[in-house]
Image (cartoon, rainbow, N blue to C red; front, side, top):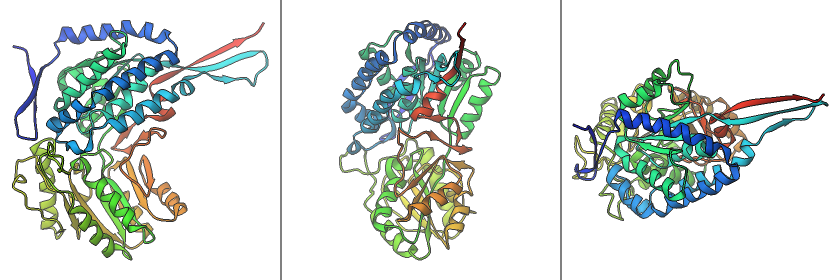
Length: 460
C-alpha cells in the first residue's frame, strides 16, 4: 500500500490534504530528468532565463488569493495578512534583476599578453528542503536564484505545507520552464536522506531545526555536496536609553508575535536599559494586548493557532517553567481555545526573567517574549551573545555609530538598527554558531549556488 502524508489543519484538527510519498522509481526518474534538463537550461543566456523566471513569479503571485486560504488551513496564518506575496515578489524580482551582474565573468586585465577571467558555473542539481513556517518566502530564497544560475532544482517541502510545493510546480508549468529543470517531490525523512547520500545532489539548502541540519550533514558526508543551512534562532533586541520607545515598542511587539512567533528571525528576548525599562514594559504590554487570538479565517483575527499542538505545548512548558522561577506574566490571557494540547496559544510577555530560564536561552518559536533590564551596553552585549544561536539582532537607538560598534561585537548574521524581523534581499542572509552555515540572497547567494571556473589564455 502506498504511504501517504496527511496535513492536519491547526484550525480544527481535520485532515486538510493527503498526498502519496514519491516511490523509489519516481525519485530516480526525477534525478534523471533534472540532469537531462540542465544542459539546455545552461545553454540559454541569463537574460533569457530572467524572462522565464519573471513569468514564474507572475504565475505564483496570481495564485495568491487561493494561497492565502491554504496558508490559513495548513499553518494557521490569519487571512488578514494576505499571505507572503509582498516578500516573495521583492526577493524574487531582486534576485532576477541582479543575476546578470552577479554571474558575469570577472575579468583580470592586468597582465599584457594574457586573457584571464573567472566565470560562475552552475553547481548542477540543487535540492531545496523548505520549512512550514514561511513556506513560500523561505523556498523562493533558493529556488529563484538557483534556477537563474543555471541549476536544476528539486523541492522537498515540509509535510505541513505540501500544497506550497504544488503551487511552485504549477507556477513552473505556467511559466514554461523546461521539463525537469524544476520538480516538486513529496518525500519522507528517510528518502530525503537517501537521495542526498546518493551523490546525485550537488547542493542542499535546508531550513529547519539544528538536529535536522545535523542529519543533512551526516547524509551528505562523503558526497562533497555543498550545503546552505539555516537552523535554530533566539534573536535578541537591545533597547538603549536613547531609543524612540514608541517606534521600538510597535516594531518589537510585531517582531515577537507576528505569525504566532513562528518566524526564523522573530524577536524572542529583549534587553532594555534600566533608565527606560519601566516605560518600555508599560508601553509594550499595552500594545501587545491588541494581539488577540482567534480563528485565522476570520478577518479580525491577529494571532492564529500555531502549526501544531505540540509546538504550542513546548512554549507553554517554557512559560510555566519561567513563572515557577519567579517570572511575571503580564497578559495571562484567558481564551477558550488556549488549552494543553491545542495549537491555539495566546501571546505572553514575561518580565523578572533571567538566563537560567529556557525561555531566554532556548528557541521558543512561539508567541512568548521575555524582557530583561540591563545596566549598560556591556551587559546587553554579554547577554545577547549568551546563546548557541546567531541569526539576527536588533539595536534600538538614535545613535547609529553606537549601534555599529555594538553590532560589531554581537555574534550574529544580521545586525538591525531600529527595525527587526525583516529580510533584505540586497544583503546576504546568513547565521553563525548553531544557526547554520552558508548564505542566501544578494550577490553572495549567487556565489553559493555556483562554482568558480578559471580561464588562463596566453597569446602566442
